[in-house]
Image 1 (tube, rainbow over the protein chains, first blue to last red):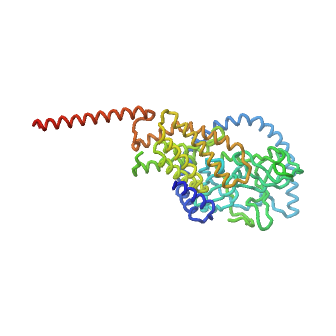
Image 2 (cartoon, one colour):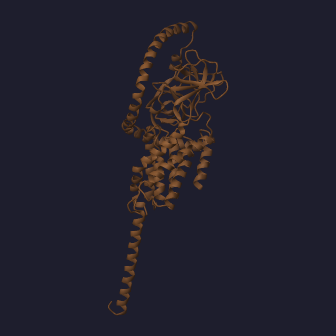
Image 3 (cartoon, helix red, strand yellow):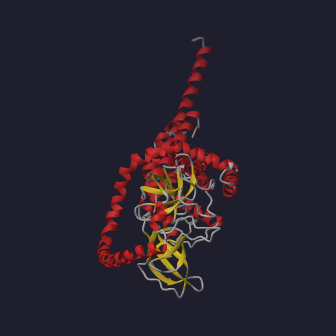
Length: 278
Length: 208
């Protein structure tokens, strides 16, 4: 009985206290002590992990192969159009004096980290990376991998940081449909790491399967999204009638495979985004 | 289970290793679309070997450790694993582990119950996004995986804690082994009484 009460008290305090509270400090201390052990275990067990996941991935890959062939064909056609548009875009940006999305992201310092631990439940889509405040990583820094946006940093210790993935139920990312689609908010569907939902897209907006989404980098001058403009999120996989009146439901398949993260890059030290706490 | 400081340290080491392996290895695996929850299986095993109090304490400690390692909201995992360990211990105190499948079946059922409890707590704390039905699939598969993983893990934990177990007889022979032990104890008692009687007669007869 005493333990149940203790659990409930800890839960209540942990849920409501500030980041600098005593429980958070103890938690970060325990995490900092165990980080080297986790790092060692993660590296030592990688071959075994890869072996087990190889069977799963091989099984999936057979089914994906045909779909990918068709996608490559479609992408070749799109590439030719995109290259022409890109050339024009560069010219127009020069004329107007605008910075490109690449230039915005290049303003950030990239800190590469290895994923050393992850949560066992679908409710917490969080992983621990082996870089922390010692490497300049700060809370709310965006995180990407080779495929696209992965999430943002939500806790830091000196040698590690908690990365909350965009598939976590507490996550929301302002996003823009390319090439000239509307803005919306990408939210996860709790329990499904392969599906995101693009919310607040009006019924009369035209959204097509295969359209790409990037972070919108939304800001009104006082509050902003934690993510800069132009980080690739995913591709529209399905559209349909939404549960909310006047909005359609758009399903998005994320580019990054959240179940198979090995290395990530934390984008830190970029331009200050108004209203985003550091 | 008799918990000496040495055994306590051994239990703590088992939980620490299980938690590290959980976050560094098992959480990366995707088997049938779900992640195996080995820490819950270990807590169930400890509850089955040590009873309700030990199961509850181990579950509480394992949960706090897991939440601390992952920098998650403290208390959620400890509440769930406490219940899982306590229920396993209560079963141990009320019933006999009559079959080799009892422990894995209990581990599967209690792990699924724990995952259900975890989901319920999360929903109570507030989830603003839509919830996929895949959560239910995850709960069922977690239970199934726990059943499979408990087959080697329960005997392993039992072996590691053998010096502390009251019924040190091999697993799966509880009722028969206890009967044999009881009969042997009665035989030893009768023999001792008999010896005392013979000695007394010898003393009275001046033999001694």
